[in-house]
Structure formats: structure tokens, C-alpha cells
Length: 234
Length: 264
Image (cartoon, rainbow over all chains, first blue to last red; front, top):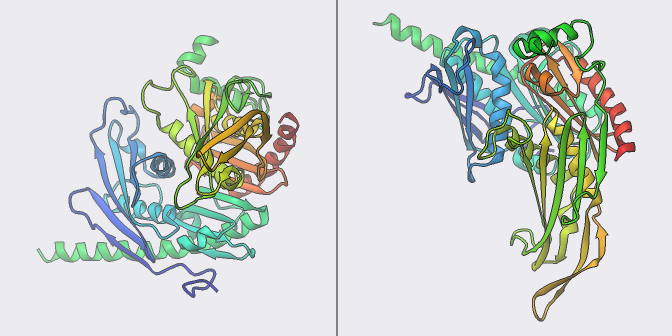
């Protein structure tokens, strides 16, 4: 029995606000239970000469955790998010520019990497940065008794034998979920686990990511509907 | 040939990859010769030198006595730092650690903190004195695959580490340690890494060198422990790597683990 009485394969209540910030080109707040992350995206914008690339846009990520001084943990998260979205963004469409992705963790109650990736995906869509695909992420943890729980809280992570975060491209999730043919965009599995446990986590997270994707689609559709109301009433 | 390599290094590499070989003659699944030497530095309590092909890394672990954190009175400290300076490659600028070094430091720390080093084994006297281990992993020559080299170097240095048997004199509060009597640290397990890269978005190779790394769109790190369990699967970069391929890499990592275990 999980502390919050969820089923093992149940994701926490998802909540998002697309376009929550009004100074950036695109933004989103994404929450799963109490874990909540803001993302603000600028792009394409001016780029420092040092970072300028002749044939593509430069993708940059700035990450701040909810607490603590900036450090290597933030650089690690920046690197993970940047490498995930570098290829998702259609970089060749805007050479010699920059897409800057800002991430601010509002509250961390576990699975913050997955929630951050989802927030960034929504913010990029809101900013109308050309994207190859969209990305949905989910986490799970393997407990001491061998059972696997999806979207773990901080408490569940502390007691877990291994924690796994996977991100998938939506085109993969739309097709059949045959594990052997999907291509995870991001994988981070840590702890002590067997190959079987890794496979089980992969499948659970893929299913959870499908649900997250459906939620994200609704959020974007709502926003698009609102915008078309505003423009048609002018 | 050398001119071509310099001016069109991507095309140069492609000539080899298209023929299912690599510019140094290796097969896609082949790791470079790996050498480990323990105890290279006398002034450190534990040290090692690791060479994977041309990538050379030195790890030194210094131990100091310190007061424990109030919240964890029976736990010592373990810090890791990976240094990538201009000395090892023109890729790195002088000054504050760049992203590569910081990401490597953080990742190594996460790997070793729970899996290998039990902070409770560093306790001298609960609430009063603990060992603080500071591991510095310095890259001397960078030719790709810093993560594998750093993991192997830190693992070897920890196995080389001997801590003087320390005693706290409760009257004076002074910790005395006899350097001639030193004991190795009890480690939880041994970690053995294997890195694979997706070069030019098409060719999956093991142990990419610097030239291949520059063209890689995805990197996959697999860390196994000595009992064959996985400790880490870390895939980053959105180059397409199917989960079938990841499984194959896990198998390859198993073979690499056997070879590494003999070297360590």
C-alpha cells in the first residue's frame, strides 16, 4: 500500500498552466501531485558569438532547484534536459540564433526530472519553437520488496532500491507500445536492479508517459481553443 | 590524409564508419586497451592511474578528520571532483569547471555515494569525529570516454585506499592516527562501466574516442556491479537508440565487465 493510497501504476493528479508567464516567449507550469516545475522559453533569440552555430540554433538550458545554492546538481539537470531537447527542436530552421530554456523547480516531492521535462515540452510548444515531436516523461521506483511504483514521491524514492526516469517522443507513444521497437529519448536508471526490473520499469513508464501525453494534448487544445475565441471575437 | 582529417573530420570518420570499421581500426563493439595502476601517488591515502587508449586519468583520495554533520552524527563525508583542464585537451577552457566536468563530477558522485561507499564506515567516534574523503579525478589526456575512465579510476583508488586506524582521546578531543597501521575501507560493491555512443546518428560504437564523440548524437552509459546487477543505465542525447539496442549494450557491458574485473 502506498502512503498516498495510489495504485502501483497510478500517476499523481496532473495539473498544468500553459502560458503562465507573460514576459517570455513561451511558458508552462507542470505539476504531478506536489512536485511542480515552471519552465520559460525564449526562442529564437540573439545568441552570444561564442555559442553561435552557422547551421542551427543553439539550445541552452538554465535550471534552478527549489532549494539550495546553485551547484553541480543543476548543471547535471541542465545537461540532461538540453541533450533531450537538442534534437527535438528543429534546430536547422533558425541558424545563428538561440533557444533558451529556463527551468525553475517550485516544489520537489519526487520525480522532479520527469516533471521538468514535461514542463519544458509544454513551454516549447507555447513558444511555437518548431519541434520534430513532443516529449512526455515518467518515473518509477522499485521498492525493497521488488514491487514497482509509478511517479514516486520523495518518501518512496528514499526507500527505493532503484529509481528510473524515462522520456519518450510522442510519435513512439502513439504507435503500439512494443518495448523492442520504441526509442526512449532519455533514460536514467539508478540504484541496484536487474535487467528484468529495468524492462518492467520501462513498460510501466511508457504507459504512464502515454497518459501524461494525453493530458498535455488536452492542455494545448484548451489553450488553442481559448486563443481562437479571443481572435474570432475581435 | 591528415589534411583531410583536419578539414573534413566528419567526412573522414564517415569513410570508415560506412565500411563498418573505425579510424583506429577497432570494431564497433571493441573497447580500447585499458590499463589500471593502483597506488601511484604516495601523498594520497588512495590513488590510481587509468588509461583507456589515449585517455589518461589520475585519481587521488585524501582523507581528513572532520566533525560530522549534526543531522548525521555517525556518517563521514565523501566528495568527488572531476577536473577537465586545458592541459588534457584544447576543448576545455581555463577557469571555472565547464559543464562536462560538473556533469561528470555530479554523476560519479551519485553513482558512488549509495552504491559503493557506506558513509557509516567512515565514522571514528559518533557525533565527534569522522573521516572526510575527497576524491580528485584529474584528466591528463582527453581522448573521449571520460566517464568510464573516471569510474574505473575512482573504483581503483577506493580499493587502494587505506585509512589509518584513528582514535579519539575524549579528554583532549584530539584524534590520533598511526599511519603505519592502516586498513582498507569496506566497500559495498565494485562498479564496472561501459559507454556506448551513437555516432553520426547511425552507428553505435563502444568507447568512442574524442573524434567520434564530437559526432555523437547520443551516449549510453551502463554500469554493472560485480554480481551482474545493473547500477546505472544513463542514455542522453536524443539520437534514436531503440530499447532493443539498449538491451544489447547491457549484454556487451557484461562482457566488458569480465575483462575489466581482471584488470582491476
